Amino acid sequence: MPFEKKDSLPNMRIGNTPLYEINKIDGRDFGFKIFLKDDSQNPTYSFKDRASATVSAYAKENAIKTIITASTGNAGSSLAGVCASQEQGAVILVPESAPLAKLTQILMYGAMLIPVKGNYDDAFDLSIEATKEYGWYNRNTAFNPLTIEGKKTVSFELYDQLDFNIPDRIFVPVGDGCIISGVYKGFEDLLELGIIEKMPVIVMVQSEKSDNLIRNINSSEFKIKQATTIADSISVDIPRNFYMTKHFINKYKGEYLTVTDDEIIEASKILSRNTGLFSEPAATAAFAGVMSYKKMNKLPDGSKNVVLLTGSGLKDLNSVKKILNIPDSIEPDIRNLKKLMR
Ligand SMILES: *Cc1c(COP(=O)(O)O)cnc(C)c1O
Image 1 (cartoon, helix red, strand yellow):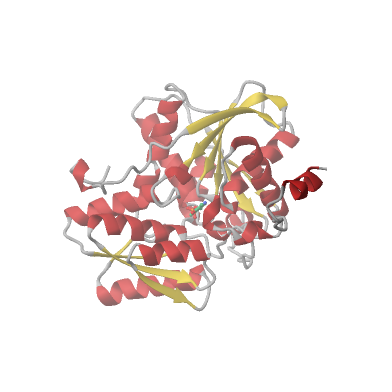
Image 2 (cartoon, protein in one colour):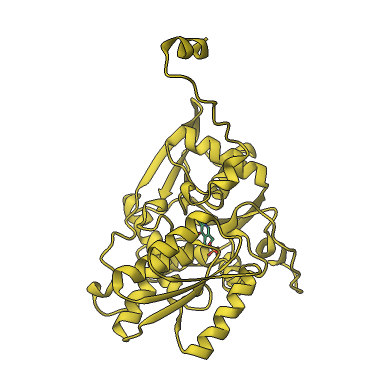
């Protein structure tokens, strides 16, 4: 890890998140195994805390007082929370359309919030300019290499939690391609240390409405299609970690697929009602990926398949609003309840 002392890390429980095994969906057994890595259990409720912790620890050891980031919401709320616990300043640039819960977190943690008229890519570019102008430390994903170092810890944990075995497949939701590169980096570290003998197959899952990484992975010319997915955390026009992700996918024969926004919402429902885990759409995209593999019979019996659940469903209620049917209220009288029960 790129810092000297363990106590440079924030005094928060980051990482060491639970891994749950399920082998049934809606009462039906299946022959393979699904393991859910619940990273919504981080202090600011997303996977991003792993990266913020590493960046913040490095800043602390190098007497850096202010950290800036561009974010679709989670990196920003994560950095804001971590900086609050470390007495560091945080400057957060987000697209103005970022979900209310994420904006609320940023403000409650006392960071400087700057919503930008434009999308994540506009916020990203402005944050780089601001970094040059003010000399702040920049946490941007795919810009600060220490984010990958923080994110790789999930691979160490998976190896540990699977009793020193690698899984067969790991489904990762992808926007910029930093989380997936972190997962690769972690297993590559283990491989190079001779702790594991081969790499797991890592499956990149993108929304069909934000698939710039997958669409361009094998083409010589990079073409952008504007992202419009409801899964805001993976809604990205320019995947900032494109080359590293492409390198890992090619080197280790990674797989990839897209899922539709309807499949994402459906996967959210299936996941929640079967497990009690409520994840945000970006995270359930990965679960939709595993469901899609299941449909195509691509998961051998006995195989171990991990899904990274990268963020909490409470962070983005708007995107599930259209499937919510909140019942009308009743007078608190048992006769009304009986009518309903009929
Ligand atoms: C950031 C994020 C992702 C995507 O990570 P990338 O590094 O951009 O590929 C997925 N899910 C959630 C919840 C996130 O916050």
